[in-house]
Image 1 (cartoon, rainbow, N blue to C red):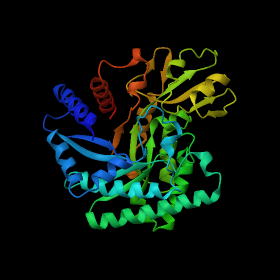
Image 2: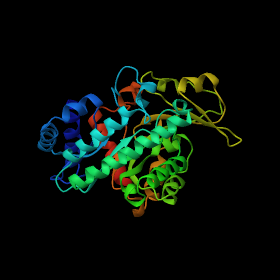
Image 3: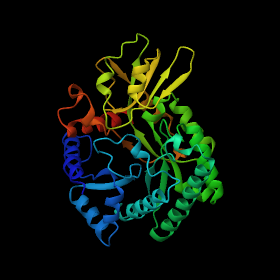
Image 4: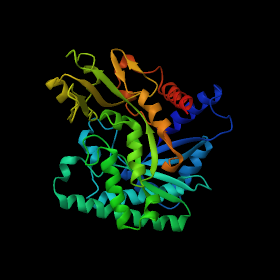
Length: 359
């Protein structure tokens, strides 16, 4: 379990220490993804604690968990499967509560708060029935109650962070804030706000042409705290010339690459995946949900949304409650070969160095 992390993260930390970017004695925080199967194995007595010690021996500490993918996120084809089971399914509730309990055991002694990210209810077409939406809200409310009880037992506030994403029931900050505020009101208002939060992904907002500052303000206006900001970068492309050859290398089969196109009239048209957008070939300015290295301002003839990372970080204020910035690029292996770094470790180190420079 986690052999890739054990090999890569210490090497990244060593590069940063050698360059003087982090203190030589500092531990290196990592975010973990645990599948449902892995989480069940770790739930056994002593297993989570043994993993924590194993990480500590490599100079690593757990900062949070990614509870979005339930199954194999790095399988040959993932696409829509990453959104299953959704929040109307009791399996999602069970998995998430299990992750929260594991996180309380994995974080270092003295940790006051830590978070688990989760999907924004599910893929939109799955929730055409209002009864399914109500079931999802009910399961979220049950998760809040479980996490509050966990906090009472452990002394650690474990929060659940919903991550809006294009194509899902919750795509934008405003609708996410509304739903979270509704669940807060169902289960205790102020106390629930600490446990149920939002995860703001810079790339996801950028793909939908959402203003980063206004997105954060939407949460603030509804009293929704931000549990995590995922620092990420998307593809931006000028499609007004109808020449899409530069985009074709990014059409890979593993993950969905939702695409939004801003027309001259100001309308944003969304496509479920990049191949559909290329086939229709609309004129306008394109944004593609493809996580590219955060330091990349361009990728050949393809531009990126890198500037929005700085806009987001500048817009964060203390009242947002966010103490976790997570650099998130998971698509290194499916980047066009010419755009991949010399090594994964070098690429991640450069990303962290770039973000540190912004803050």
